[in-house]
Amino acid sequence: MATPLSSYQKKLFVFLSVATFFEGYDFLALSQILPNLRADMGLSEAGAGVMVAVINIGTIAAYVLVRKADHWGRRQVLMITIAGYTIFTGLSGLAPDVYSFTLFQLLARVFLIAEWATAMVFAAEEYPADRRGMVMGVIQAFSSLGAVFCAGVVPLLLTLPWGWRSVYFAGVIPLILLAFARRGIQETTRFTEAKAAAPAVRPSFFAILKSPYRTRVFQLALIWGLTYMCTQNAITWWKEFAVAERAMTDGQVSMSITLAAVGSMPLVFAAGKLLDVVGRRKGAVIIYVATAIGVVASYTLQSHWALTIGLMGGIFGASAVLPVMNAYTAELFPTAFRGDAYAWANNLLGRIGYVLAPLAVGLAAADFGWGPSVAATGIFPIIALGLILLWLPETKGQELEESSAVAG
Image (tube, rainbow, N blue to C red; front, side, top):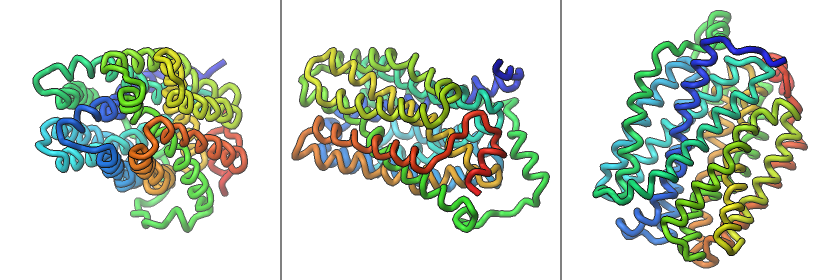
C-alpha cells in the first residue's frame, strides 16, 4: 500500500503542480506565436532558429540560480524564480523589437527553468520513496496541461488588438496570483537537517567535479543533452511544419495540438506512476522508444489526422522523458549536492543540446524543410536510452540516502 501524504504534502503538491503548469504554457507559447512573430518582425526561418537558440541560452544561465538552492535554500530560490518569471513574461509582451523580445524571453527562461528544477528538487526531497516517481511525474504532467491550455487560448488571443503579445499578457495574471499563494510553503526537511548538521559554507564552482559524483554528472549531462536534441524540436517547429508543408490553417493547427495534447494527458500523468511500478530503467525503455516514434511520425505522415496522432506521441515523449531524467538527477546525488547536480547536469551542460537543437533545425529547414530536419532528430532519444541502460542503475523504491550512495 502506498505511503499516505500529509496535508502539507498535498498542499505542496498542488502548489508545485500549478507552478509547473506555466512552464508548459510558456514552452508552447513561443512555438504557437512564431509564424505571427516572424511576420510581424520580418524574421526568416534561419533568423527564427537563431532567436530561439539565443532565448534558450537562458536555460543554461539558470545554472546560477539552481545551484544557489544548495546555499540559500530550496524555498527562497523557488520564490525568487516565480517573481522573476512573472516580470519578464510581462515585459516580453511589451517588447518593441525582436532584440528586446529575445532578451526578455532569455531572462524569463532563466527564472522559469530555475523554478522548474527547484520544484523537482522539492518533490524529490519531500515525498516518500514509493510515491516519488508518481509525484514528480504528475507535477511534470501539469506542464502538458499548461500546453493544452495554451493551444486552446492562443487562437483566441491572436485575434485581440495586441496579437501575439496577448499570449504573454494573459500569462502574467495567474503568475501574480501564484506569488500570493506561496505563503505556507516551508523549506524541505532534508535541506534543513543537512544545513543543521554542517556549517553553512559557500560551495566552490567546481566542488561537485572534485567529488566522487563527477562521472555521474557528465553521464547525466550527455543523456540530458541528447534527449533535448529531439524533444526541444518536437513541438517548437510543428506549427511551422504544418502550415508550410502540410498547408494547415491556424485553426487546424490549434485543433491538432489541442487534441494531441489532451489525448496524451492520461499517458503523461501515468508516466511517473509507471516509473514507480516497473522501475526507472524499464520505464525509460517504454518512454524513450515512444518518443522517437512519435516525433518521426508527427513530421513525416501526410494526413491531418495521422499527423495529429503522431503529434500525440511527440507531446507525450517531450513530457514523459522529463520524469525519467528528473528522477535520476535527483536520486543519484546527496542533499548537499542535489541543487548543484541539477545545475551542472541539466542547465550548464545538458542544455547545450537544448540551445543548439533549434539553431541546427532552423538552418537545416532552409535547405531540407521542417519535416525532414526535425524527423532526423528522432535518433537522439534512442542513443540516450542506450546510455541510460549502459550507465544508470535502478533506483526504484530507494530512499535518497540509499540511491545517492550508488554514485560513490
